[in-house]
Amino acid sequence: MGRRSLAAGRRGARAVKEADAREVGRLIASQCVAVRVRRLGRVITRIYDAALAKHGINIAQLNLLAAIAVAERARPSDLTRLLDVEKSTMSRNLKGMEALGWVRSNPNMPRRGRRLSLTPAGSRMLVEMRAVWAKAQATALAELGQRSFAQPHKLLSSLAPTATKQTKTPGAPSAQAPSRARRG
Image (cartoon, rainbow, N blue to C red; front, side, top):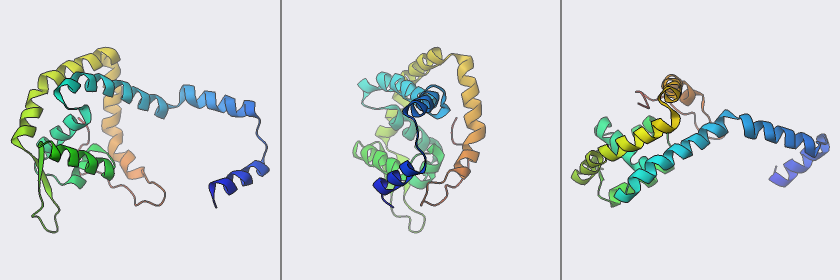
């Protein structure tokens, strides 16, 4: 059933007052945890990205460099689960970082997939960004407040594996729980 047909079918089922829709809209816009957390994530991302921009890297790239360094020869699929990102996002980010010379892959691993590692330039970028990252981290924590950050950090640590098991996009296979902690 197409979008137009579905909408037409719903209209006939029950008339909804515009004021009711506006009231529900206000409720969701003002109280939805998902909306607020996503917005907070964008605000915090901008803090890190602003600090890193003059060095030619963003926080998503830095986070990926860190994950590759820690995971030691991980496959892209391992990193996708570890960082809880879409496969297409991981593929796009890795392609760009390989073009920048920060990441290399060893495709000579039949049946096991390619393994990733940092190049000397990627390792250098990661190490050189430590002080910049620390300053952005301090700014983000000052904005959030140390105590305010502790609660979401604890919550993410405990919920991340459970939430991944429960996530299922219609028509897509179920997500698998990661084999190790996803966020630090």
